[in-house]
Image (cartoon, rainbow, N blue to C red; front, side, top):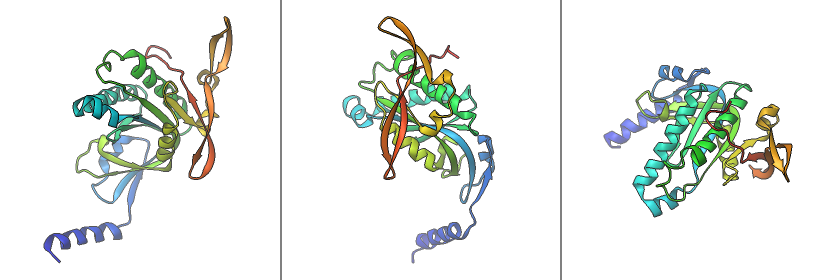
Length: 241
């Protein structure tokens, strides 16, 4: 066995035999207290999984610089919105971000409002800034649950924590079912716990104002089980409550 194989073997043995330790918290800043290795931070929260749906197309049509520019701009918007709500942003993959709202059921409304603001920001408020990125398509999926984060880089940047949790993958699956103009999709558990201010809107139908449910029920398969999600084209501007 070479020296590097021996060193790697010893490191893996150390990880394999360690009792994984974690901090249970709602405060992402507690991630500063976990080590690079077999320790993590554990929290309950509502997840927005925000994805650039057609990154290969953008790369092909506009090149790497525009793809990186699109991601950077989306990150800036998501971070700005998150900072106003006590959430935080994680760079989950080259084409997706997580926006995490630590807490229990009280985070449902804040996450849904933020998703609707993200939808408005990307499709309306800042469309001039995104005009140079040809054909940008995005969508969001939301779910609630428990997540575990570990450091896979030896710095303290929260963007670089790797997160694990079934709710993340359910949010990813919901996101796949959404497309223009229904940019936002939520799990049934979130939908059934929203108050009317986020479920009902006044719209004009054949010249008559009526109150309608802004969400559309969709059936999909998740882990070989038939489930329901709710998607919407409703958006909230930055100056709306």
